[in-house]
Image (cartoon, rainbow, N blue to C red; front, side, top):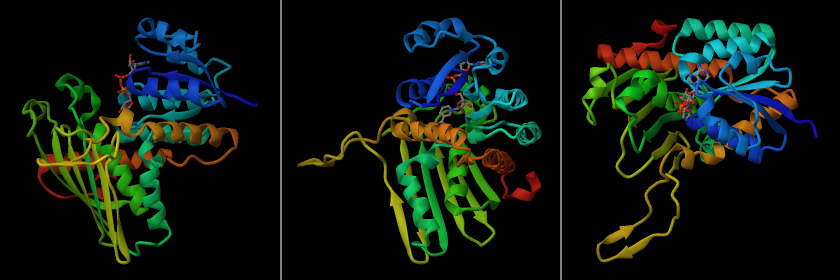
Length: 337
Ligand SMILES: NC(=O)c1ccc[n+]([C@@H]2O[C@H](COP(=O)([O-])OP(=O)(O)OC[C@H]3O[C@@H](n4cnc5c(N)ncnc54)[C@H](O)[C@@H]3O)[C@@H](O)[C@H]2O)c1
């Protein structure tokens, strides 16, 4: 069986999810090595997985002749540079979200991808979640008729530290970006305007660094349809991930996933488990499916389901939302483009 040789840049929280999936669950993949700024700290962990090449130098990994594809899961600001270097070396790329913070840098990276003719998939894993895929299928096959509204609720169980928020690109680039992509994925086209209200209701320190912890966005599309995104960094009852789509012929709802669906009724009320804790638990299967999809796109020469353009658009919407919240006005997407 042909195995695809991969190199991973960044073995932090999400990098380790990808590495474990590649090593333990995807027989067509072979992890050749890892590059991480904290190489010394991950060497033992990597060895236990049978990976003995661990370097601090991403370029060394990119130019390793056994590496055919690179998984980029270092912080967002490094993504465009690593995409460019990988493309120049003729290596296919899976890049975590956001594809970058700066549109000019992203455009340069996408130009290089095109020039090199490599495949690029962006880590919008929620598209591979079986529930959201089903909603997409209902919309695509016309079961809901014309779409009127999409309502996305996306609340994290615990906020990042203020220090981490300073380098994550902020709530729009780090968190809401998944919801911007979900809106585009479900609607099948791009919004023309965004109006966002941002608040610091959990911790005023986020506002001191120019960020928010609670945001509500209204996206409007060319055909007049509307999408709301209700986003919070702290939900006391766990990771709250729901979607509702309402159209001319009907509606569809996706509820939270829970450890069990056993409902206990007693004199104090009716009780059920809180939602699965966070992204690692809730989207476990989708991380595996997106990576399987990436590997098969390369081995079978197919187009990835989430492209560089999808990555660019999500960043455009993050920039537009930030501008809207800061300037307290609706922002036309054309202003950003
Ligand atoms: N798709 C998802 O659900 C999801 C979930 C979490 C994070 N992410 C994204 O993944 C990326 C990484 O996030 P994380 O939470 O894993 O961060 P993290 O801080 O846990 O891990 C980042 C890793 O990259 C390493 N690193 C930093 N700079 C580097 C460099 N220049 N070269 C090589 N290694 C470097 C760090 O040492 C660290 O091990 C971010 O873009 C984030 O938005 C996506």
